[in-house]
Image (tube, rainbow, N blue to C red; front, side, top):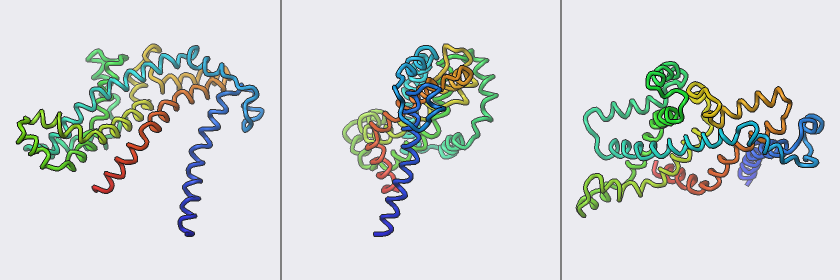
Length: 273
């Protein structure tokens, strides 16, 4: 009983450390700069909704939001099919050298990001893909592929071999068995990998900072960094906090919408492990 009470108290304290800063940022985004410094812990009186309009339109967050959304969706559209096919081959059709190749994929997760930036910059420059959404998308696909292959390989390994054999007996070829039987069964893994990749790409900053240079192609983290600098000099802190809320809301909505699927998949993975 006492252990359960302490566990509940610890979880409540942890939840408060997450929720209270979010609520404070939300409240602060509706204040003027004078209100923020005069009474940082009180409710806005009156709420200044124009902070959001200023951040969205005048500070260019709308354009950055669209760029991030386009790059994230394009990356997932390429990443998930390619990652699923590669993981399926590693899991079901081992070949000579497949373990070495899989180890190289795992090494991609451990390679420090900053060591790749300089050669990546020159490579994209030679290909004419610097400062382009297409180039950033391809970089994000390569950057996310090791994690995707690693997770999906585990999912395909847990699928019963009898299902694949039954599909082959029913007349499916290798490609049809993958597309009609094995891939739908891996849907929970695809959803979880897609969510984690989407959240990571939505907040990615170092690669976008190096690759994108023009204002028109800035992604949302670059836009918020620029907004912080501009509003800091203009002392418009309300618009700055409004920009932070705009960045956080999509991530929270995605996680809230798929929270049950994420929890189920993580629990299933733990039980299978």
